[in-house]
Image (cartoon, rainbow, N blue to C red; front, side):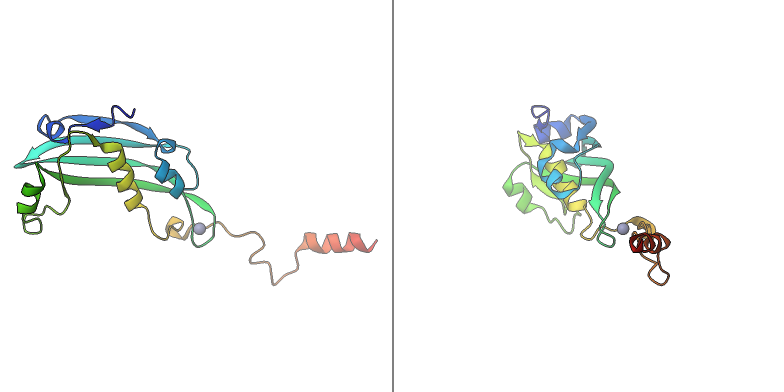
Length: 164
Ligand SMILES: [Zn+2]
C-alpha cells in the first residue's frame, strides 16, 4: 500500500495515469485522530492529466463518524470531495505562474516521490466540517427530554415500590 502511494507526480499526470480503490480509515492516522471511529473506508481515485499544464485530480467519498456538536451523539457524515492541483516543474515555474489570474490556486511543485495518500488525508481533513451536526436537524431526541412537565410513570412506580 505505502509503496503504491508514492508516485512520480509529473510522469503520472503526463501519462494520464489513474489509481483507484478503497482505503481503510484506519490507514490514515491523522484522520483516525479526527473522527469517532476508524471503521469503514474511503473510495478514492487519483488521476493525472494535462490541460496546457499537468495536474492531478483527487476524488474521495465515504462515510466518517463525527460527533454532533448539537446533541453530542456520533453520526455518519458523508464525505464527497474532489480537488485538483496543478503541477509546476520547479519552484521557479511555480513562482512565474500568475496563479490568481490563471485560476491556478491549487498548485505545487512536482515531486518524483509524491505520496498521494498524505495528500488524500490532508484534503479529507480540510473537508471535515468545523462544527459537525446531524443533517436536516436529525438529532435523536435525548432520553428524558420533553417529559419534564409530566411525571415519568416508571419513576412514579419506582417511588411507589420504595414506599412498601
Ligand atoms: Zn445531533
